[in-house]
Amino acid sequence: MTFLIYLAVTLIVFQVSVSFFYIYKAIRFEPVSSENDDKSVSILIPYYNETPQDIIDTLNSIANQNSTYVKQVVLVNDGSNNGCNLDVENHLSSNNFSFTVDHIQKPENGGLKSIAMNYGYPYLSKESDYIVVIDSDTVLAQDAIRNSVSFMESHPNFSAASGAISIKDGKSMMERLQYYEHIGIYPVMKHGQSAIGFCSVLAGAFCIHRKGAMDEVGHWQNWLVEDISWTWKARVMGNFIGYIPTAHAYTTCPVSMNAFFKQRRRWARGRIEAFKEALKKNYKRSIYCLPWLAYWMAGIFVPFMWIALSILKFDVFIVLFSLTMLMNFYGCYKYQVIHNRKVSLSEVFRSTLVSFFQDWLVSIPHFCGVIDEIFGRKKVWATR
Image (cartoon, rainbow, N blue to C red):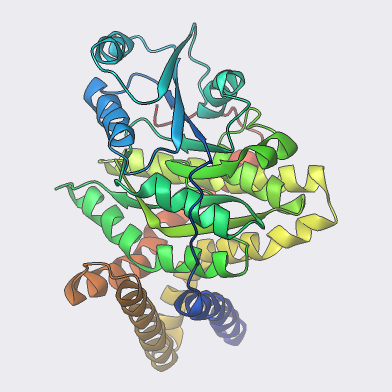
């Protein structure tokens, strides 16, 4: 019994300590920015059986950027069979964009987003300075590309950076839960990681890469979760990965509990897949990824440790719970103030609660994802 209490306290204190470190770094880190109008951007957008209006909204958000960096968009239809590609083609033919659009038709669906991305990569301009990847249901804020390029120009040591993802307005419980997740401790942690150049994952919905770094690290192979695997592979090759809090994008999310669990199960498997990729690339440097893996793995068991601690040592549970909530609330609030985000105190409070209890919710799909990868089960997108 005593051992279980010590184990629970150790795991909880470990996770809280790492969180405190990243919160501290996030509050103190203020990225600089600089402009360079000579730079060019190519955007890669894979899609499969998407709602046509979502793709059109994505294209329009690119067209409405307040900068002229975007020179090319490569749309990859990954074997859609619902006719959405025809609606997209009609939209392209009836609009004159300031950038070229290559609408690539992949004959068959490959089952993985990474396969479609690899298929479209050769069509990207070799003259581009930056490659941006956007999901086909993601809408960019007007200054998203400008702020992304500005960040990369100001931080030449970064090879890639993640945009700041928010959830589009939704009314369902699952949509609201994920909305609070993305305005809570999650972006604070990523910003803190960026302060030391070790952002743990690029957002697949919106991220930017230097063309040279992409050529050096390679493309996305046939990874189940391409954003995590590319990030970890790049890290062991000596690349720095950042987070851009001012490059906002808005995306959709799973609306049912079943779809949410499948997504998080896939992401969990992707982390093990990513660590295996890092080991394969450079087993010595894979130690750089161990803190990410250890922190995430602890998160699978910490919810059960909280429960055990509340039963076995309630007074210790109350102390640690209170400290954790206060730390997360202060970190979230301070972060919103620093970046002038219009988030109310009540939303910060709700996001703090959601961030804490969501760990309990996702621990089961996370565990299942780890088992999937350990036993080499067939890779499927699950939510496609």
